[in-house]
Length: 120
Length: 107
Image (cartoon, rainbow over all chains, first blue to last red):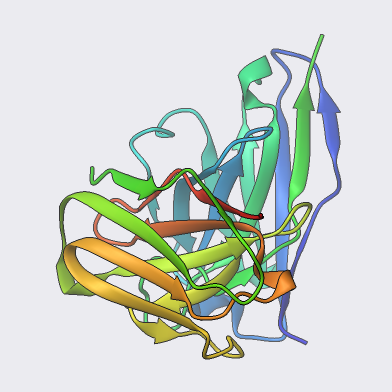
């Protein structure tokens, strides 16, 4: 089955670091762009950025540049989203999603999401 | 960065009716690089339409997309109970962005 499996919910304090993951299976992970989308509580979708696991080429949204790090390890078919110092405003659901083989930067396969809660 | 504005914010209709959702871009979207997603509560989004008018795999033909340039439309010809959800457009040019969403609710 073609799927993206995301890591579990996290509860963190402001200032802590965090790395969440997204493991692809059932397809050639290295040859599809994979990205991250934020959804704050009760709000809409925000496009954060994408990475091509084959060579780690990446594109970030200007809104998220410098705020998070997107990476991937093609040897274990896993993409990551990382924060070095969390803020309360990072509280959100984070979805990983796969772009189609054409390389167009929309998403045809989604993970179920990882809920990140940042609270003191 | 291309901003997308969706209207209306909320659309109240009954099953069997026709739904028309709008997505307007702040600048022309090249090569009709626009998609539509559906999101139900507690679920991840699902791709409905890509390339402005092509249905994704498994999407019923009551869903259709149209438009070009700066004005795009998602039409649901006859609403089924499972269609009541939030709909987002997204452009996938050089710096992809989402619209703010339209909530389709039961009247």
